[in-house]
Image (cartoon, rainbow, N blue to C red; front, side, top):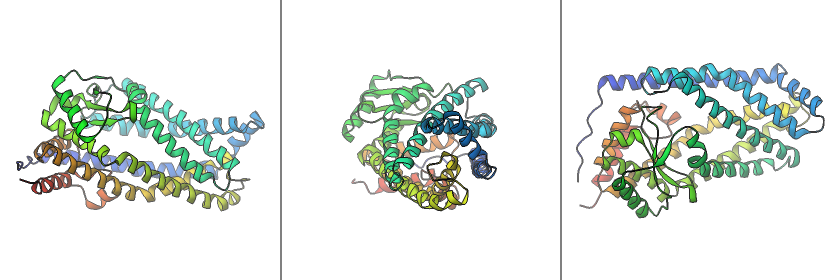
Length: 382
């Protein structure tokens, strides 16, 4: 039952992966600096207050319209400022490293779709937040947490049937043998799915992926066509067993609960900070939409501080799902070879610096996952 060691990556592949990661790490830092700079400028120049006052002059007491249009204009303006960075990071870099197959026009169309979704969700979410700040100034943070959870549940449910089809072709998988094997794995994990679907990634990317997407009646198995093309049946089933392991361990509920706890703490910290900050900057109350940059700054700073801890919990759940996959297929071999292929195909650094993995990685490094899989296999009953 012991697996052969996965072949080492070619030195050129590892070097490309490290360069690719370094570019994205620099872009991450640049986005942080620009975001903080834009938020500070928006607040300190008085542009935020002027926009809010102008909208109040236009709409009078219609504060819902004021808040909605303010949010729409602000989010669109920020996206416009960040567009060159988005284009470079999400298109130019991906093309340079051979991971994207999209034309500039195709990428821009997807960008517009993403922007439309983000603007719609942002306007709805922050309109709700500012209504809570107005109606429930003492307990708004609790209700905001409940809204955050509701948004997460709704988006998770709608993702495979509404959101993903906007970007990729998703159709029933026509491989009867693989569908039967995947269905058997799902039944063994106690997961009810509506079917197994082919996820059209190949026309846009060279990377491979698979997912157990949706909740309840929308839950389905998605297998990327890039995965179906280059991986053996055993490797695909090992990857699927990993995804099913998340369900078996209740990871969706666990991660939502952890996210809700962090959201509650973040909103609570924001409430405590806003009480003093709004007066310093001359706003009547935290419910004044002109103080939006202060709320964003508080939540943004908290999310940065919380990021390593949420990533640590996510990595722990990923390793548990790997353990389930090894025990389910009764071998580490298929998972190890699949992880090795994924690392090469997706340009993942197999063994990043420990501090970098701690700060930024939501998944354990490939090397650590492979070592863990082999250790789990060694402990299986012979």
